Image (tube, rainbow, N blue to C red):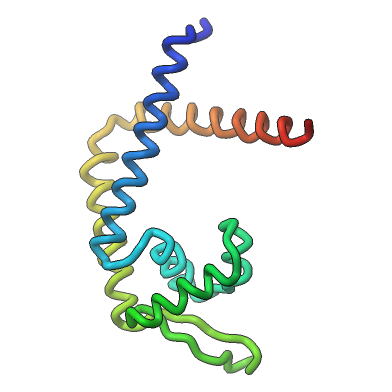
Length: 151
């Protein structure tokens, strides 16, 4: 049985509320660590130890100049250190300082706490159904957007 328009509009409204709740919570976590959400994204990527600013900019629809600015801000906050690469003096290496590692640990701990308090309280079947429906909706929206771009 297909959903009716009121049910579809309620689902869209719920998805918007969920997205906004995630955005708000992510902002709270970042502010709690004394950084912005964009700084958090860069900090998290640098923590992987395979950070390349140009690739990060491309993957996140950002400009290299904007990423460089965020890196400078993180260096000024004492969260990130930048040095010349040992293997190629033309390249820079990025890493977290001790302060940066503590900030990332605190962010991860806060995120895990939220998962424990919100997600683990749900029934396994509900989470599985949410994932199934979410994946299907995502695939349909991506396909629709791709088809629309061709027009």
